[in-house]
Length: 221
Image (cartoon, rainbow, N blue to C red; front, side, top):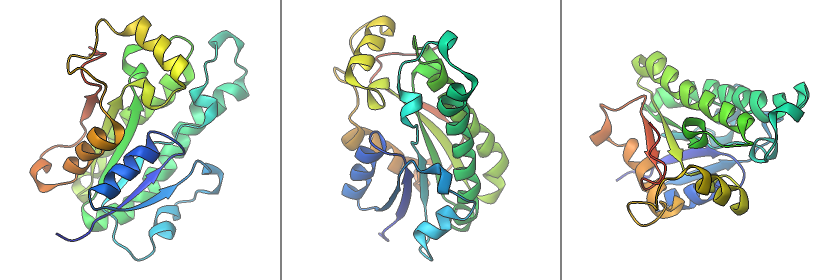
């Protein structure tokens, strides 16, 4: 099988562990950090050069998003940094990915935390950015399907994005039970193979999906 190429954007987890998981599955992976200020519409093409790209993954949420913050104390600039700017960066990434992915009938995947669906006290800006990214995936799936591009959102347990103390408190407040599968899915061993599967011909009829990959812990309605 020909070696395939992915671009993943985001510092730390879940980007780092998912990238390692894809490499273990035989992918060539380019990894960009959080410096969205340097992004342009040609960033994706500039990063991969002439190499065909089959998959772009958005997992970019800066520190301003991942820190607990009470809505009543946020200034307009604080809100922009934690909620608006991350979504604007996701839009820029998608715009830059269109040409390379259209050339290969590729796949665009947004990784989002489950708090966007189930709520998370103190993380309204993060939930806003994440839900925006999830809806962006669905909109792009409709708009770009004719160009051969599929787009999905994978909603992950907040532990994939947050400091352990924040993630534990959120799980205690929202989860109704232990994970039915006995564990929260591992980014390297479980999430990366699911993303890999979403790029293959066997899933060619699937686009615009919002897949919950949390081991059944949250089960948002």
